[in-house]
Image 1: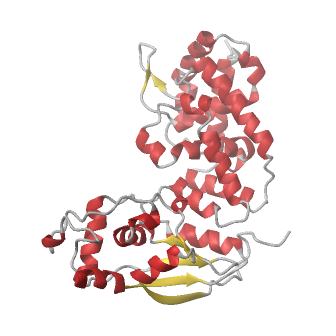
Image 2 (image 1 turned 60 degrees about the vertical axis):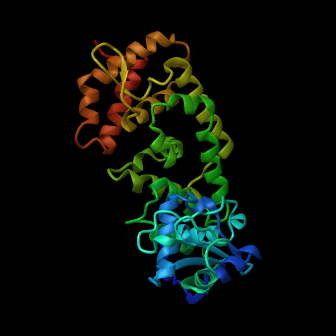
Image 3 (image 1 turned 180 degrees about the horizontal axis):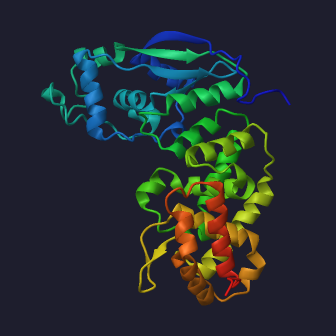
Length: 360
């Protein structure tokens, strides 16, 4: 296997700076010479007002931040940073080109007379100014090095980005041959009925940021890379996924998918959506999904699936409440919980309680 690991430090990124007018970008997109993939970022996280104010800024002559594109092996350019800016202008110029409704300008504060305007109703001078306004594009030249492209996207979108950690994983994984297949497995399993029902206490706002997909990745990291667990969960999950993507760690898709499905079939059958949350003094599940609880219960069911499948659900729920309320579990989920010893301890506590093996 060729060396495509993060341990090679002699790589360079060759770039070209080009000024495209927005009209040129639209034509290149129509001709499929520039690809705008919505999976790279959630298309139109911006509100109509934000999109409109970008158009207003262009009309005012304000500078527009640059965009980044990657040149594929066939010479086609893929937009990897600047989707919101680019797609907002393209929506105004030709909404059908990106399968969006027509953009009607609203919320413009400085040039109020353009509010309510569309491309067809705005004056010709303003329309041509928008089309002819240039935007600086940095093109990452064609490279066979998957890690360069992967790392570039991750770095461009780390820090002040509005993307969540899992959204960045979704996008950056697609820079690698076979990476989209791995990520699409995460997406498919995130929709598995028993799983989505078991984690239904996860807020919708977190699902929107792909935290459900992150929980699938977390399951696989827990099963296959538990001893690399670290306090920075984002780094732990990134490190595990990178090893899978760059084939530094075996990942049997079919076997792992079956293990995931069997585990969550059992968890939901026995515990419903109460498996990963706290309980109040009345024994009622309360609050949202707690990641440390998720880890402990998932690991216990993976390790003792057959034993737990034979126990009635009501009994398991009673045992689970006892595990979560125990001092040992509280100590393993309190301050400093994200260490390997405490991870092992909370898994052990839950496993012993669920299997009724707690020392008298």
